[in-house]
Each structure stands twice: as structure tokens, then as C-alpha cells.
Image 1 (cartoon, each protein chain N blue to C red):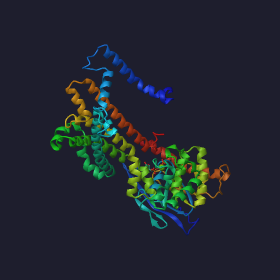
Image 2: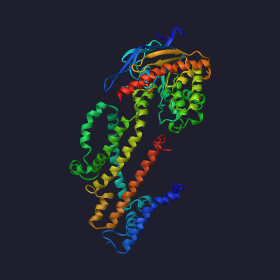
Image 3: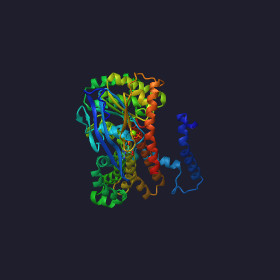
Image 4: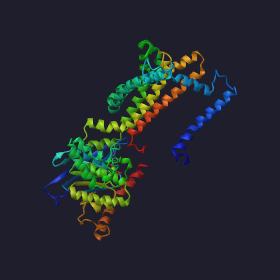
Length: 274
Length: 270
Ligand SMILES: Nc1ncnc2c1ncn2[C@@H]1O[C@H](COP(=O)(O)OP(=O)(O)OP(=O)(O)O)[C@@H](O)[C@H]1O
Ligand SMILES: [Mg+2]
């Protein structure tokens, strides 16, 4: 395709639709088509977003360093709080999901032992655990970690199992033929062969973690992007709600881009990559 | 019966002793191998020829130790084969390279398992890369190689371990005619230089005559040895010579008989 030839054109092409939507939305808002309460104009949202981003007090230079001041804005603080919860919950999910997934993929015995309970628990959405999470872990970060790790756990687990089970038996034969022991087979054949699937699981997992953190923050904590949206709702600050939503979108995009970069690096050998 | 006592009575390296292999499938039992007896001497090049589904891969898998025979045994230098290992290096039809390893990593994999010293591994890999004209591709991943190059890597991987016996399952089946001829010549060169015993499975009658000292023709269901045809023509063999064509006609007749049985059995099952 022609538009793919230069990176600049490609960029222009991919931002064309968002820009159009914003322009039309701005025009319609200025014509007074929607009340600012229901759908504020993009310019208003942007002002609110900048206000949300920059530090509350002006920089004085005495109390703390410039960097600390720069990071003292509400949006930055909320992002850090949400990011901390996502990463904490995600790491827990990776530890459990990967370990159990590798074991279940490798051994039919372990698979048959755990599979029924997993199939039973898997369809329950993490949101349904909210009341129990609060009962068990109280308020603050612990219930959030619990809910997030629960949400991210299943995609990681299921994809890891599938990855290990889908390893081409021919490669296992080849490795055995070259003298591989069980441990070598696992470490140097099964693990890398399952990597594409595992990475899919991690990517889906972090996506779920991101959804769950927003929900978790609406119930049990008093900072983070999810909490801020809920707070804005109390005051009917539609512009701030949208500013918060866009922040979530940007953070999600950043995380996914990072995952995709890691993905491409680890899968240099894969036929889909060049 | 067909043992090649005439060639070297002193030292058969590989002995296949009365092997049977039965697969149990949904409809019943498939007699993949029946009464296979074969002795192969050190340094011999043996081709196994037969129609699709006659049990050639099954036979190689049994020799490689991947799946035990239903009865009978395989002896390498008098020791029974019970598990796969580098003594019988296998070159697979589908290459079976590890896609996440570069060319040199694929070749050094077996050596790393053996825990050789790093410098020793590097030396061996360098020699093989050069011998197989892979030097320029050492850091490439298998996905960026042509079929011929992939198969060269697969051969180098086995050569690296210095396996005395090389099992090759239709290794050049997927290559175009020109590349195939190059690879055949290269294989003959390797065979002479490294003094390997080679068991080479193929569909190709010409290929088997071009390469092998002996050609084992198999029957279709049950898979038995129909006949062993020795080829004594000097190498390099000329495909247009009258002797070559004579052997080719003879083998064609044998293989066609089995091919017909294969067709008929296909017709029955439909
Ligand atoms: N694991 C298995 N289970 C059941 N039947 C099998 C199995 N492996 C092979 N067979 C059957 O045994 C017979 C011999 O198979 P094999 O793969 O050895 O044939 P082949 O000579 O290598 O054929 P091709 O030339 O197509 O590779 C076939 O009829 C096949 O259907
Ligand atoms: Mg086969």
C-alpha cells in the first residue's frame, strides 16, 4: 500500500480519524449542541487535563528537588498509584500463573488434578470477588492486589498451558536425539517454544489487570485513576471524568506498546517477525 | 536372510533383529513392520526404498530409539538401543531445527549438552560451518534460511556430535531438483570424509541408486523387506549409464508392485 511507504504518512494516516472526531466534537460543542455537563468540549477537557497534570503549588525550590515537585501533580500521583497496583498484582499473577501453567502443561497428572477447579473458577469475573476481597483483606492496596492478580492469573495460566502442550513433538524428538535430559528439554526447548503463547497470556493478563485496577480503585482506596473518576462524578465534573478516562487510555497504550516491544524482541526468531 | 555377510563378516555395526511393530488404531491393528532383519556394516550407505506408508519412518524411529519395537531388538555395536541419543543422529524430513536458536546455536546445542569446553565447541562449530558452506549464515534464524540450507544445518547438528550412525528420513524430499543434486553430492562427500554409516530413507529410485551401497526395498502392509539390492557402480555414478538404468528398471518394477498394493488397499478403505 502506498501510504505505508513513508513513516510520516503512516503516522498522519493513523491520527487522521482521532483528529477528525475531536474537531467535529469541538464544533458541535461550541454550537451548544450538548450541555457542558453531559459532554464538555475537547478544549475544556484538555484544559482540565493539563490542570490535572501540573503540580498544584508553584515551584519554590526550597522544600524539595525539582523532580519531586514535577511529580507532585495529581495525575502523576494517581498514575503512579494505579501503576503500582497493576504491577504488584500482575507480578503475583505471573508467579502463580506461569509456575502452575508450566507444570500443568508438562504433566498430564498435574493437569488432571487442577483442571476441574480451574474450569470452575475461571468464568467468575474478578468483580464478583469484590465483597469477599473487602471482607478478607479490608481496604487499601491488599484487596486491589488480590483482585488484579486474580484477573490476570487465568489468561496467563491458560495460555501457558496451551503453549507447553502445543510444542511440536518433532522438536522434542530432535532434542532427545541430540542427548537432551529432562531439564535441558524443559529449559531450552519447551520454555522457548511456549514463549509466543506465554507472551500472549502476559499481554492479555496485563490488559485485564488494567481493567480490574480501575474497578478496584472505585471501591477500596482513595487515590489512583479509577478513584479520581469516581470522585469527579460526585462533583459532576464531566471534563475531569473524560480527562481521567483519556489518561487511562494513554497509560494502557504505553503499557501495551512496551509489551509489544518486549514481544518483538523475544520473538525475533518467530516467522511473523522480521 | 538378506544379511550382507558378503561385504564384511567381521563387524556389523548395526543389527536389526527380527523387528515387529504393531500400531493399535481405532479400526484395529496396523502391522507397520514385520520380521525386519538387517545388518549394516560400519561405513555403509544403505537406502530404504518403499511406497508411502510402508513403515520407513517407523523403522528409522525404532533404530533411533524413539519408539520401542513390539518385538525384536536393535543392536548398535552389540548393545541394545533402548532410548534416543546422539549415537544414532537423526536428520528429519521436516528439518526439525530449533527456530529460536541461530544456525550456530542449533549446531552447538548437542555439544553444550555434552558440556564440552567453550573453545572446543566454537572450534567444532566453525569447522562445520565452513565445511557446509554456512559461514555467512551463522547468526541467522532458521526462518531466514532456504530449504537446502536448513537441511545443511540439520546435518551439521548431527555431524557436530560425531554420531557414528546417521539416520536420514527423506532429507531432500522437499528440495527442488537442482538443490537436491547438490545436497546429494555434498552428502557423499561428508560420508566419505567423516566415515559415517548412513541409513537413508527415500521415495526416489534414482536418488537411492545414486547414493547407496545397498538398497532395501520394502513391502506395503505389512512392512517387510522385499529385497535388498546391492549397487556396486563406482562413484560418482552416471545416471545415463546402461548399468544405472538397468538397476533403475529393476527397482521400478519392485516398487511398482508395492505401489499397486498400496493403491488397491487405498481403494478398499474408501
Ligand atoms: N503413531 C502411529 N499410530 C498409528 N499408526 C501409525 C503411527 N505411525 C505410523 N502409523 C502407520 O504405520 C504405517 C507406516 O507409517 P510410516 O510413517 O512409517 O510410513 P512411511 O513409509 O514413513 O511413509 P511416508 O513415505 O509417507 O513417510 C502407516 O500406515 C501409518 O498409518
Ligand atoms: Mg515417513
